[in-house]
Amino acid sequence: MDELNNSKILLKKAVGTISKIEKSKPITTATPQLINEQSWKDAEPGIINSGELKKMMYSAIDADDYLGKTAPTHKLNKEQAQKFCKILFQTKKQIDKILKEFGFEITGGVPKLNENSLYIVGNKKTLKNLKNIEPNLNIISTEGVLEPDDMKIINPKINDKALIGIEKKCNIVKNQINDLINKVNPSTVVVVVDKNNNADELIYNSAKKHWNAIKIDIETILD
Image (cartoon, rainbow, N blue to C red; front, side, top):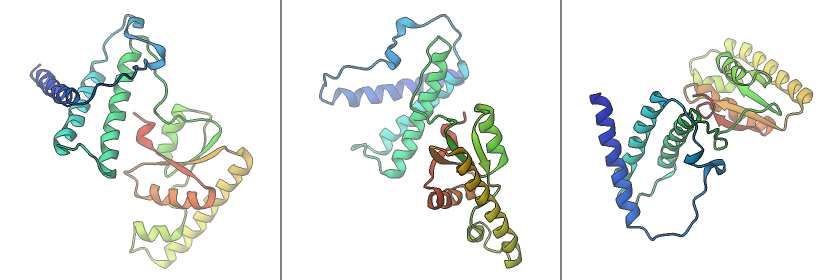
């Protein structure tokens, strides 16, 4: 209970800080948009998702930290903006889950998997996770980089003999991707990037060159 009370106190401080800033801004006449044209009056009986509510509260506190870090201008550079917006997207996802318990189905804002695209991932674990979400997904796992020279970036000490085998594997995987593209004729080639996998960004760079691929972050798909 003490931890929850402390969270409430911090959250109230966060809201208080935001309120003070908003009061100093000019009043606008913009009409607020209701999500999916729904309002709180459409709520159905349900159970509060306490786990997501707690996560949401902590996310709000993390977002409030940026007010102090960037005062008095509150301007964010590229890196700061990415981190701040990541917190907001996480908060939105948590709010959506809480609202779902009361009959609200929120859509939009998060990239969705679709059967018209071809997805490239760096390992079978990610492949399995995405297949669990969308079983009919067109997806292939590279199980490593797509260019042998990229392996030198990951492992500078790799020897030339090992690189010969990696080059053969890279060519096989690229041929498999080409075959899939010819078979599926995807609308888009998408590389799913995991920041914890050093090879994923290298895979994306290669896929962008060969197939004009785009990338999405695994965190925007998985909870």
